[in-house]
Structures are given as C-alpha cells and as structure tokens.
Amino acid sequence: MGRFSPFSMELLYPEPYDTYSACRSADLTQVSDVRGNLPSWKQPHQFLMLEAPALDQLSLSRESCPLGIQDCPVATEIRQLKAEIKALEELSETDPLTGLFNYRHLIMALDREMERTRRTRLPTGLIMIDLDHFKKINDHYGHQSGNDALKWAANVWRGTLRRVDTICRYGGEEFTVILPGVRLSQAIRAAERLRSAIESSPVDLEGEQVVVTASFGVDVYTNKDNLSVEDFIKRSDRYLQEAKAKGRNRVCYEESKAGHTPSEVTGEERAALFITRWPG
Image (cartoon, rainbow, N blue to C red):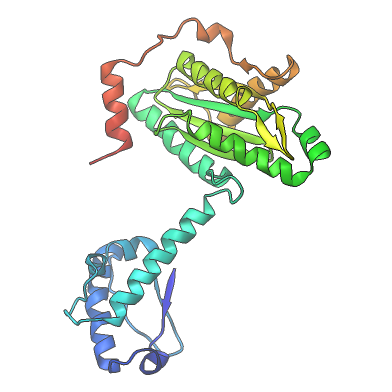
C-alpha cells in the first residue's frame, strides 16, 4: 500500500509543487473509476492511501504521465510502487528455502481450484507428501544437509509435474501438490511418478550419495463433496498417515474409488480446464 504526502513535495521533486499536484489530480481521476469516489489531498499531516488493485488500473500503467510531462515524478513513483508490491506479494507466498510456494499460497490456490471444481465439475487432485525418516538425516548429517535435501527434493519434483500443477512446501519436510482437472487414477499415477523420481535420484550429503524416499497420500475433490479447504487437506493427510503406517515409500488412497474412475479426461473436460485456468 502506498502513502503520499504533499508536506515535503518541493524537497522530494525538482518540479514545482503545482505540477506535481496537477499530475496527481489527473492520475486520481483514474482512481475514481476503480474506487467509486475521487480521493483528494487533505491536510498536510494526512496521507492519501492507494490500494494495490487501484494501482494496477491507473493510467500510469501505460508508463506515461497523465499530462504528458517527460520524466514525470508521479509516473516514476507509481511504477516503483507497483514493482515493490509485486515483489512483496511474491515473497509473502514463497518458501525462502526451497523456492516453492508456501502454506499461505496453498490455502488460496486450493480454495480457487475447489471453487473451479464446483463450477465446472472438473475434479481437483491433492497429494500430501512426507520425506521418510527425515530426522535421521538431520541427526546424522546436520541441519544444513537437511536443508540441502529439502531443496534437492523440490528441484526433483519441479521437473516431474505439469505446468498447471502447484507444488507447495506445507511445512518442515512435508509438501503438497495441487492437481487441477484430474481423476483419482491420474492423481495416483502422478504421485507414483513423484515417488519414483525421488527414490531414483540420490542426494549428495557431505560427499555421500544418500537415497531418500517419501510417503504419499492422494485424494480428489469432486463437485459432490461438501468440504472446506482444511477438511480436504485433513482427508488427504489421512492417506499420508496410512502410507507411513504401512512402511513408508508408498502411495496410499481410497482403493474403493480408484477402480471406478476413468483413466483419461474427456476432450470437453480438457477444454474447460484450459479455458477456466487461463481466461482471455
């Protein structure tokens, strides 16, 4: 959120204050279309607050001054603020260690996909993942090597998923993958690919090639389900716990459902998935 004050404009900008005010007034005319009323400068000690959605729709998005002034300070400031807002949004949804999306992004993205399922009747798959015996890696090789193993796993899985899939670090050594538009049989195959990929790609820890495995729980949300985001995650996590209880390094799911789902998405479903995910 940006804050502007006319209190010290003459010190901040070489242009006369009247020019700055004129640019600001012309620019705020664009904001009125977004917010429904025209903000205005108040007392010098008060601030004008511009929200991110308003910034995106300003005439300055064309990177030009509303009055056609070359090197307009307002245009420059708005461009800088938009860049900072975008960077902050990315940071707030990114896990700094692995570079994957974080829990915050997971909740928002999964909520969107579940809503898409309710509208289009295309199912949404969810895979819960837990690296096996990760505490032993930390204890034997050290926590830095544990971090290296997490980054290695993230890189292995990035190259195994579709571009439309979303992989997030759930927390600790747990990860989550959102699979738009897949039936349970397809989600199971995706999980098996992830399981095989990590098992067949040893990680170098302190000069030693170490085989790391993972356990997987798979579930699918359909338009017939009445679940919240948290409920869907909990239901998927039950299958992950089952995989760990059965010896780890395996994929678990509700077997009664797996045998009754078509293996492929129809042409109409594929088209609907494309259209609803990338509008315009």
